[in-house]
Length: 127
Image (cartoon, rainbow, N blue to C red; front, top):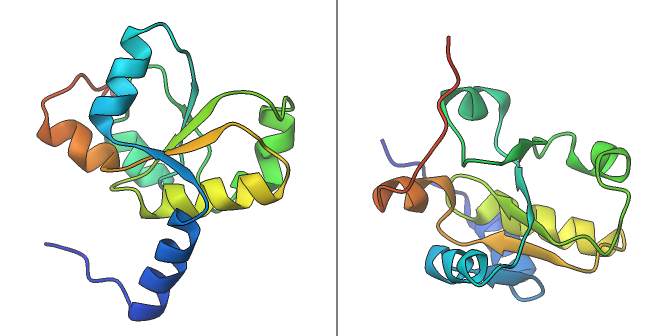
């Protein structure tokens, strides 16, 4: 079932997207192929993370991101790639991290959904 977002939420996301750097999945894969490295943060909810995530990703849900980021990644120059289901929460998260002084933050357009639609590798935790 497709999720319908409220107009106010969509305006917030579009506003954030004007300020944050974003990669398509293809751009991100090309950057990895060329040797670039990123700390991948999954900002989805705990239940979403538990159903699967990108290989090498770390989990820091949107609800605690701003509270925990400086303890988790103290280097404000670190290359960080944020992803969520499709790129909305990750854009909002990237915008907030930039406001906190993080200089090399990127949001993954398409997110988990787009990654899966392309049949790319994922990690499913054992139950």
